[in-house]
Length: 354
Image 1 (cartoon, rainbow, N blue to C red):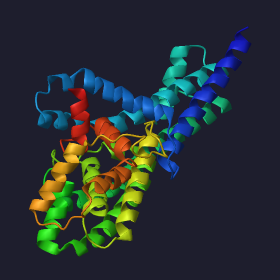
Image 2: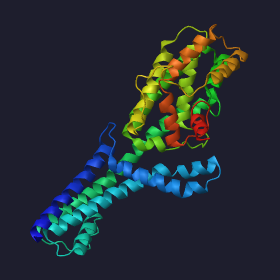
Image 3: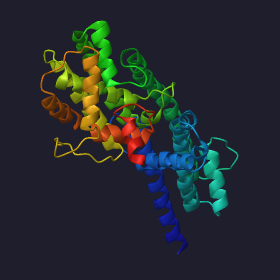
Image 4: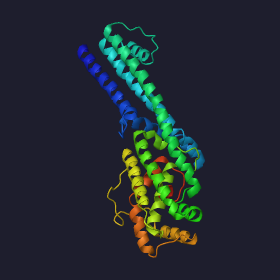
């Protein structure tokens, strides 16, 4: 009976270790979007703790942002400790199954091997092989996470450079209306095409990096008033408004920017299980922007001297037809990341909470 129990424990230990290794590979090594349950468990656990304790004490958004700034870094550490704890538990079972007379001695042997402390005596070929393999796994996981961090922060810096530059062109918080008006006043609307090219490349980079390096989604901007999600929303709305109501020659680059943007946001939203309709069409699928808000934007641009098309009703339908492609995922990502206030993006979630 004891032999059967040791066999079962040995197999369970192997499964636990293999599951942990597979999780580390999917999260760190695999260069593609691959949601993992252990990674989700670690980050969701940290988020729930922050929501249950520190965030309850925050009275202003600045205080909330300061607390949330620690979310991704703590989540990464929690993920490492989760992996190490599972390897420790798995090898404890393996040591006990092959040679150790008690669970305590198996735990000591596993901890000594995992952390390469060497204080627990290891005897026998089987136990020695286990000790060497566990030490190698522990060192490899720590090394992988250390190597993982430069990739994360390099992508973070690329993302934030564009977000910071957007303030010059779209104000703070970023506004699509303000962006169009400033280009009309300073650069000329024909220079918008350069921005669409820049942000098309930015969206492609964000889609690749934020799905393969998921903690990036929760790394907050150095300035609490800024967010990569609200910046994306402002650019997409600016491109949509330009195509719908600004009376200038059609620019295919704006279309490409919008498509790159909603595909990027959809890909990130899919990673986090956010539901959306990939074939959404207005008016069958409503958007969070009201017609009155669109009319206000029209009036503001008209007062700024921006040339506008003659048919306001058709312009509204055209804008809604573009916006419906990214409306749901944009608002959802603002909610997930607890983004700061920005018109037509994070304010949608704030309105729904009232």
